[in-house]
Image 1: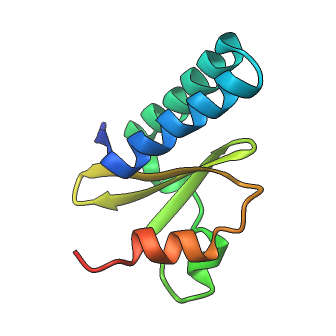
Image 2 (image 1 turned 60 degrees about the horizontal axis):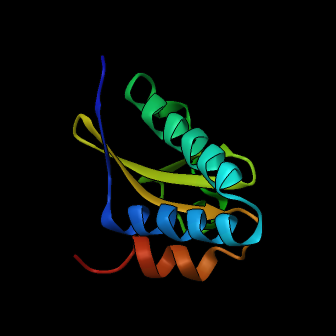
Image 3 (image 1 turned 180 degrees about the vertical axis):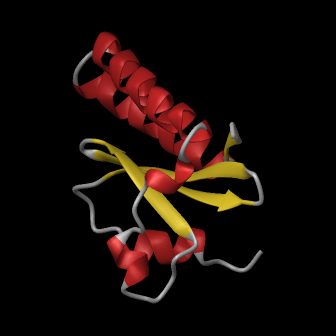
Length: 109
């Protein structure tokens, strides 16, 4: 079953910030490459979103509603709701993510 994949506003902001960082510290070509590869990764979730693993930081808290896939070193964190996939966070995996994930993914709706 193919599922619809949506990118949240927060994740879109993550992509924009990542692109600008790579562009200013490397090149536009490198920034475009990373953006394209990350986009391919989360678009591939339409066929098998269950393949991702539960982020360790959330599993430690007993939360299993979110999954992640990688385009190393970047982590793409998403949630499956009904038949749709929502990309929530796109972040450099070398960062300490505990606080970021708690603040962004666990905030009251």
